[in-house]
Image 1 (cartoon, rainbow, N blue to C red):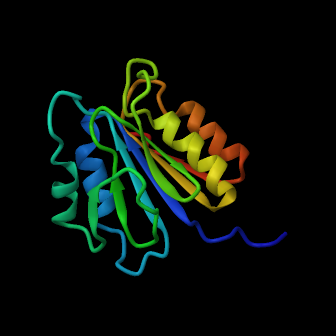
Image 2 (cartoon, one colour; image 1 turned 135 degrees about the horizontal axis):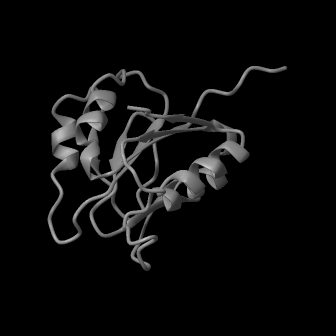
Image 3 (cartoon, rainbow, N blue to C red; image 1 turned 45 degrees about the vertical axis):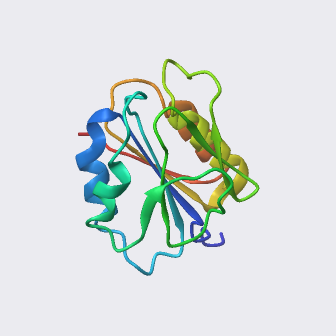
Length: 154
C-alpha cells in the first residue's frame, strides 16, 4: 500500500462556540506548513467578523478573511466571511450567497464538499465543536474522496 499523500488543504470547521478551539489549532500550525488552511465558523451574519484578526495574532501563518476569486495557496489561512458560503473551485475562493443550508451561512458542508471534489485524498477536515449536523455530509464526502477526517469529541 502506498503512503497517503501530503495534504494540500486543511479545513477547520466549528460552530459559534468554537473560537477557542480554532485558536488553539491555528496557533500550533507551523510556519512551514505546505498546505492551505480554510476555516468556516458559524457567525452572526449581521456583524463584521474579527475572527481573522483574532487568529492572526497567534498564528505563524498569515490569516485573513477570504476574498472572492483569490487563489488558494499553501501557507495561508482563509477565513469565511459572515453571511457567505466559502467554497473552492478550480483552486480559487468562491463566496456563494445562495440560501442558507440548514439555516446556516456559511455552511461547513458546502466547504467540505467543494474541497472533496477539488482535492480528494489531499484534504484533511477537522470538525471542532457544535451540536448540529452541519459538517456531517461534508465529512462523509471528504472520507469518500480518500481524505482524512478528524472530529473533536469534547
